[in-house]
Image (cartoon, rainbow, N blue to C red; front, side):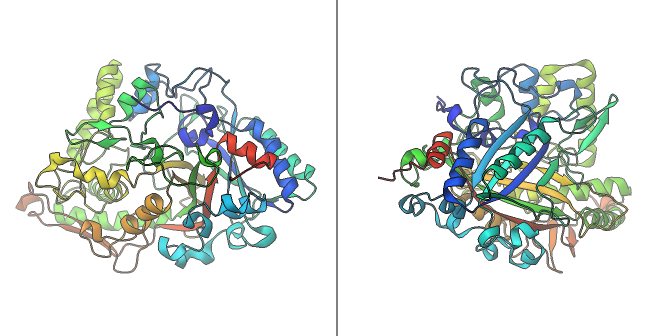
Length: 562
């Protein structure tokens, strides 16, 4: 039985991935508090407008399933009219979802009591810049946006206010986004210098970080996609935890999103991995800042702006595709798609290699999908949707299908790190370690990539938000040990081929296909070597996302840590 969550006490951005639920446009604002009393008044004035996780009266089901080229389980759920979230219907769906989060220094600036502050975890107190070497960010500090380079004193980032908005058919955000932006400006102006909006995002020192899903045209109108600037599909297999979803939605989406049990079935992760004040996978309620009402139903977030060098990625794929095509005697387009899929762990439309190991199998997969679309065969579409998430690696221990150090296997190794892998894959041991490292992934692309202009210094990439209750054990472990290091995967110092730091010797080894023959390469491995840098951090920090109860405590200045 899943835990019953107080959805009206939880900020909506924790449970809802806004970009995939009808809010493809966003603006993120960074603020500095210069007067504690006026800062608290600002929080209290904004609090009634904060979007919670309570169910909406007209919940967005997403686009009809038959509009989706590659259905995900969440699409199937919405097409069948299954409510995503539990609880009674309480609120009308807003045009703009508003949320707020605080850095450690932001809480201090609002005069949260010292006894409460000292209960915060070390990594949150340190902040992302102090821990840059651990994250592999230290070599990129000079390339950060000004808002992060200058995060000191009167220009230190204290608060993040996010506005996620719906979109008009012409691809522009609904007018309510600008209206809420002006309200935020007015609130700052009313504080008479007590709260200041910080500029400095991007090369033009913009007032806010603007984001948008990448759009595609269909039927004479623009639709948001799940693509990013590398042309890859994203948004599959996000963690599912107890109490997050309604019963039927949980049953469908837990497959591939939850934890693998010893009988190879799937179950939701413990709530405490993602919300403070609840039991985690160790059957413990982690220590948190006092009083418990201040921490419960809150969580932490790593905000990261990641620039994507889309030109370098495209050029590298073209170069490697030429080598691959000559070695394995395939055409260049097939070679390019295959190399890209091996780097990522999924084909460009999101189909996992574990579901379609070869280019021919991928083509067959999409032919079956197209046929199911044409026949409007919802049961078949639901079956296909599960293949995007329902897999593990016990049948591919050497990475002949999905390379062991591909981005997908690094970010979520599933069953492959257990002490009995792969000799006794049904033990489920591999999942136990991985269950303590899961993060909720949120965010949207920013900027526009123009192939005719240099990409290295362009303003386009991903705003990546990692949400979890233990930044050190979850986010930082994944970033340091699995993304920026290769020993857990028997790959030495090789880093992630997509988001890792790359030196001149960076490589990814595509293991030999045991079914290959002399006519198609003779069972030889393929090494993607001399990888250029594809992703560079442009700034970020650690934030605390308080509950609605904690927001009221902060705004009214009545926190009693005893």
